[in-house]
Length: 211
Length: 113
View 1: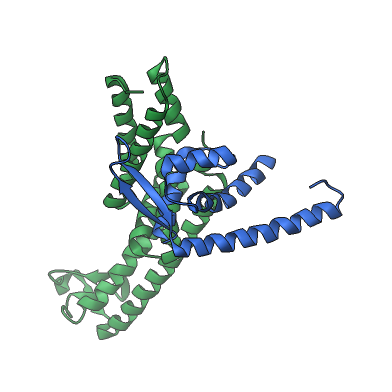
View 2 (view 1 turned 90 degrees about the vertical axis):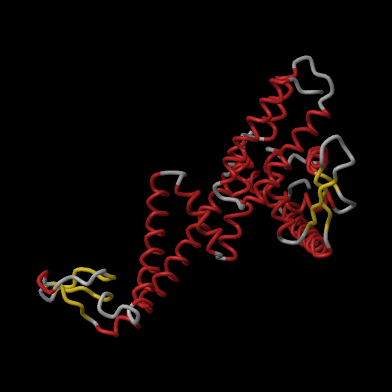
């Protein structure tokens, strides 16, 4: 079967949606290879279809057997990104998985948001520990009337008239170093566990059962 | 409920079935799918075989190579690696032991095997 212009257009549309769906969570090189392989599958199936009376109907059947482009992209995510995130714990796949999961529902969004916040607070704590020896008068725990109101860096340092004083001295370095590391480790461990649970759930009722 | 159980069985054996399909020699994606469809009903959605093939290649059980000149369009051929063959041998041994035990259990329960 040789595709007409409308058939070609339908194939391009399928591949476009597939590529867009893959791009959010696969490395560009892997995504490009996946698109090329799926296109090869479609071209091969079209070539094997012979000379059907209704080209578009035959093409739709080929695409239906392949699966909806977003579902196929999800299958790649399940097999590659979430698998890699759970088993290796590498930050890139973990973040890509969280980003993808955040788009799957309200609960998942807030879960991913919470984990992202955990990473950010952990990194901010490390930044405080690193910046303290460089900017000793700007970084630390800020107190107002003896009550801690914030932790971080203020540039320039606020005038004494505002009532803000810096507390903790250089003791904030080990304190925030420890806090940052613990937060990052706990958040990362929680992220891997959550990805593992979602992955297992999707493996149970996931895209292999689509038709 | 039975459908879920069947689905679990299907998922659990698809990887072994794919490795068995490429064991005799290199095959490309659609060829693998057609072979699986000829012998099994493991493939419900063709598009989900490709991510599995990609993962098996990434894990070092298969090698993948694009061949441009065997068809009007390029084909990606998958070939079993030595580590893939070792994994397949282990899987086949475990699978046979497992099904043998279940068969004995069925016989003990008076079920035809």
